[in-house]
Amino acid sequence: MQATVAMDRLLCAAAALGLIWMLGPLLMATLGLHPLRVAVVEDPAGVEPRVGDMSYRTRYGQFVALGYRPLGTTLETTWWSTPLRWVRRTLQGQRWLAAPDDRTFVEMHRIVPEEPVRFGAVTLFEGGGLLRTTSPGAGLSGDLGPRYRRHEVQNVDAADLLGRHQKNVAAFAQELGLAVKAATLRQVAAEDAACSRLTRGRQKVSGYWQLWLAVCAVPALGFVLMLFTPGRQDRHLHDLAISALAATAMYAVVRHHLLTVELRDRALKRHGVTR
Image (cartoon, rainbow, N blue to C red; front, side, top):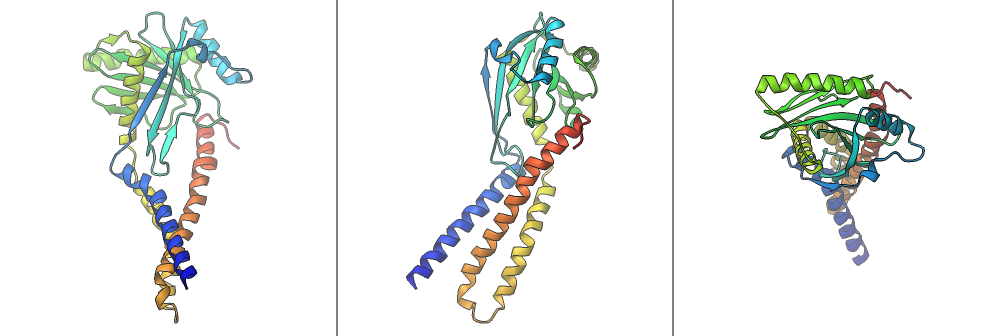
């Protein structure tokens, strides 16, 4: 009897932890909480191409040929970046280069290891604000805030991207009466983090609640059926814990698929690559 009670307590504790693991990020994202920390590594050598990464080497060479110099790397750590994650860190960091006048910056990064390198141009403005032109993007073009705008382009090289970026900067500055600012890597990192916060603030979470309810539907139905099973009147807490653990297991499988296979396929599709 004591062993049964101990097992039931253990099951309940595991079920509670499972529910916290599932619901924690979803609740925090629903409340709009996305704490973000950026570490800046001012080491130009860390921006240089690595052996075997031809995609990055190609883009890096294009920007260097246009007069850009390596600056350093920024590493973002975000809590509850999506309703599926407790914490997310940038995969390889954002590697930055700067124009000779420090008024235009370019960065390169990846979302998944299998994709070609993503690259974008960034310009800051006096008094705050940022404009980014990025390729291939993630479907987030538009105004993110009063002084923040994002443009996404596809199928461009370094020179094409910079040409479009300069036109975007000129139009945005004229529209809002802004002046372009020469900046440091730390200033760029701070404004880019502000832009990331604004981007995450636009995230819709209703679909994730629907996903959670769908995953929990079958275990919940099983629990309801057990409520009316003769001889289990004293086992309701045990049955509830089992149902919650079943929901957690199902959620873990779906979450793994979304954060691996689905994320990889969507990232590659933005580059025009299909598998």
